[in-house]
Image (cartoon, rainbow, N blue to C red; front, side, top):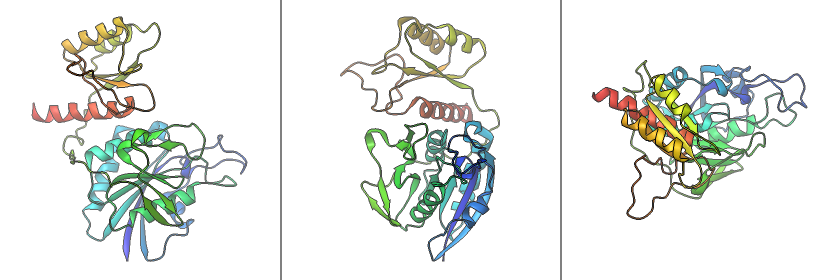
Length: 312
C-alpha cells in the first residue's frame, strides 16, 4: 500500500464555528489533523499517516513552524515507503509557505498543500473534498514538487497566490495558470510538474533569521519607513512597487541609500499578476524580483541572506 503522510498545521480547514451557517466567524485550528483525516473517506489502497506539526491560524504562521514543517517533510520524504506528503494549512499565508517549501525542498516526490475557506462545521464545508483531492494527487506515481490543491484546482507551489478573501476558489497561479484539475479523483494535467533546485535545510535551521520587511509605493510614499527600518537594523527590504516596478522619487532615493548602507533590496510589483519587465539594455540599481509577489520576494530574500550568512 502507498503511504501518504498528512502534516497538520491548523487553519480554517481545522476550524469550528458556533453554527453551521457561519462561514467567516469561527475559531481556526481547533480540530486535530488525525480527526480531519478520519472524517474523510480516503481513496482505497492508501495507508494514511498523520502528524500534528502545529495548530495555528495561518495569520500566526511563524519561522519556527516553517523550520519544523520543512524538517518533518524532509524526514518523511527520506522514507522509501512514503509516496507523498499532504500539508493542511490556513489560506492566509499559504502562498508564503508554498514558496518557502518549494525553495527549501524542491522535492522529487509530491508535497501537496491544501486548505479550506469554510470551517469544518459549515453546512457545505470544502475541507473534506480538498483534503481528499490533495491525497489523491500526492498518491500519483508521477507527481513531484511542491503543489497546492484547493477547490479542485492544482497549482504549482511556486506560482500560488490568494486572490479572494472568502470565495472557495480563492487561489490562482497568476500568468502561469493552473497545473491541472482534479476531476472525480483523477488529475487532468495541463502542464509539467514544477522543477527546482533544493535550497537545503542547513541555512534554514539557523535560529537567527534576518529581518526583512515590505514597504509599498503609494501616492505620497516617502522614505520615512525605509529610514526607520534601517535604524532598527533591518537586513532586507522588499519594495511593493506600482506598475512595472515604479517607485516615487523619495522612496527610491531612500531605498538606494539603504542598499548603499548594506541592506539587501528587491523590487516586486504590488499588482496581482504579471512580472517586472526591464527595458531592453537597461538595468535598475534596485534588483528585480521578477514574477514573485511581494510576500514571496520577502521569503526569497530571507533565504538568500541566510545562505549568505552561511558562507561569510
